[in-house]
Image (cartoon, rainbow, N blue to C red):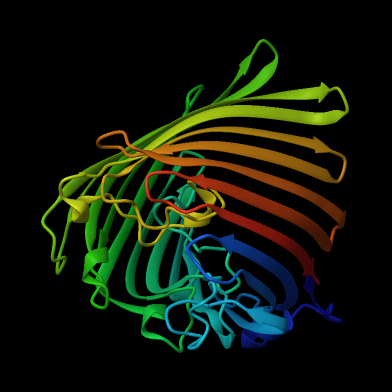
Length: 398
């Protein structure tokens, strides 16, 4: 919800940038517990994220947006925030929510061209399902991009391009891993709506990372996502393929493939549920068991959304990753119930990595307040340790 003061009369001239603006405030509290057999201690993290933004009005097709973000530890801090943020806490598993205050977004928009928006500054970039480019919104400190972007879209499709100078990562400004300079990187994504079929998109992500050369990659891909009616029920489907190779200053000469297939059915008024959906998926990130450095990588992705909530595959294993999964979700009024099961193995060689069960129970209390419980249990094999994670979250938007 945005808080705005109505003007007694329409604003004119440059003053409309301020007088027609809106202010918004949001909070997200999270308690996270991690029991990882690889560590001597269990982690408990209690953090609060606060955000304040101002969206200006428009003057001669120009506008601007400012957003500040603060993350604080509250009472419990038995965790390693990662990347050197919390020296002396290495006995705990990583919960990548370091304390800090920063400018999360700050950009200028121009919309004077037909169906086109130009944006310059620190900005959120989420492309497709965020498998390759996203904001890592699960973590308390969002990943944003210092970039110039062009976004053209209408009812026929969309073309998005960004020239990225810097990636502001979830680890924050206080450590080198939180700030990755690009030289620059190029993000191109084009999509077309195909009547009766779905959305067909193609993309090229050319990452040239000065600070982490192993992240420098060229990735080309194509994606088809759609929905259809099957005997009166809603069916959805996804098919995606990508090829990746080393680029720029990457020290490893390699190439790897990625593909993802899934399908789901949604049913209305099933037993006590208003809606019930179930789906199957198969995702593969290529690798080579004889050459561990040649696995497919996704350095800009919102990784928590894929390959299990226990986050055991944020980095693709050397032999790649084969993830076969089942998802079931139900909605009843303000309640949401979700379950996911994963079977993990090596893409090359077929060694078992383990299995995982993820559960979620959520309730939307009112338009401004939401409560969520999450759990993830990873049963590791082939050198992977068992991991259990629990979360309690309260989200408020004012």
